[in-house]
Length: 486
Ligand code: N01
Image 1 (cartoon, protein in one colour):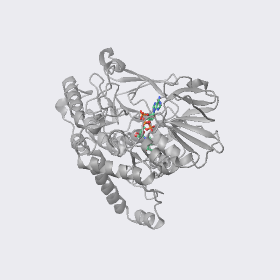
Image 2 (cartoon, helix red, strand yellow):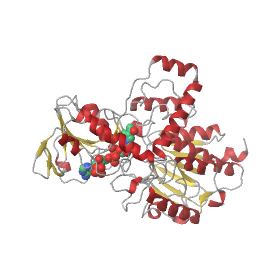
Image 3 (cartoon, protein in one colour):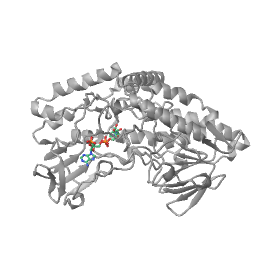
Image 4 (spheres, protein in one colour):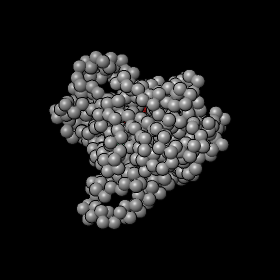
């Protein structure tokens, strides 16, 4: 280990999938001084926060795993949330990452003093670091809807990512606002338990049908005895996903997208018997424009006698329920706000002050951006995993974080070798990347006429607009000319 390597101190913010990964990979690369600050009392990020009934990953389980830690024990093709949380716990323990995590410490402020980062924590303590890695997640800050009277509701009300398990579902009249992945999974899971389910749909969704069979014991035994089989399976799923989703959504004219639309269309036609209900559920925009929903049970659930699809707009929330613009009061005991996340937050509300007093909040005043989604000019040695404008189409964010981590480790070698002490993206390189990605986004399916969290408030897609294959290529090796090395 070089003296420099030992002397570089890393602080990682967030112990979710990406934070655990970064800590593990840094240690593996021989960086000994690594600390992870986690605001909650356990790791797991999104899988800790989202505990709603029906939660599962819509990426196949054998793909939604770290490439270096295959899991022969997945119970289903698409794993339920608690199993995924247990997997991250297990990996963190196995690789000694849990010892590096300091729980109950929220990073409130970061300030660069010209040579290092000063880190202020919610506990009042301070720390410092040469390098800060923000692994703070994308879908993390709940978005609460701006609906009149929301606080007047007399029943139980919570966001899908803040599920209150103390409220009994049996016998309850439940309202769910939203038709994104969260609402669809919740509705599919609880409709046959509750007395009434009212799904408040502002926009219908294209739904791809999936089977979610259990992985049988014989297969699990095979995976256990021969991990190479799992590695092959992961590689195959990856190829399939990249071809069918990731590379398709960035080309609005692609055949793969047309195929997805056909499958979703056939699913609607074949699964919904009542023509009036079918029309209410039929989207008027292209499949893939919003994030595609994968579900094997939503159409079944919404056709149950106790389920009501409400398409009239919401006028206001009242003590007894939701009043729609047609004057009807939908009486409810419980209201679930499955209204998504504020995807423009990233490190915020943390206050981040870079070189020369530059404030990240101001730099990101128009929209969050980062060179290749990992680095912002004037914020030396501050790097992001799953940062702004990275790949977020229906595929594994683990693969994104792994590619980014491997890329960043190459930059960290420059610090370890003593070639420089500070690294940040150059302004020109960042401006060029921003302009290129905004231009490229014009060809994606996300701008073909729908509202979604893939678009910022000016209608510009917030996601990597090129193929996933290109992302991987770019992540192979940093173009050092695009960085300022001091
Ligand atoms: O949120 P969303 P989500 N009045 O933003 C509606 C990931 N995820 O939590 O479409 C009425 O997709 C809004 O309506 P509209 C996945 O990446 C993954 O469901 O804008 N309705 C929309 O229907 C996913 O894409 C998994 O017209 C209002 C819904 O709320 C992402 O998280 C599971 C409203 C928000 O949908 C986000 O999914 C779950 C209002 N005022 C989530 N405001 C797995 O793989 C908003 N809506 C496990």
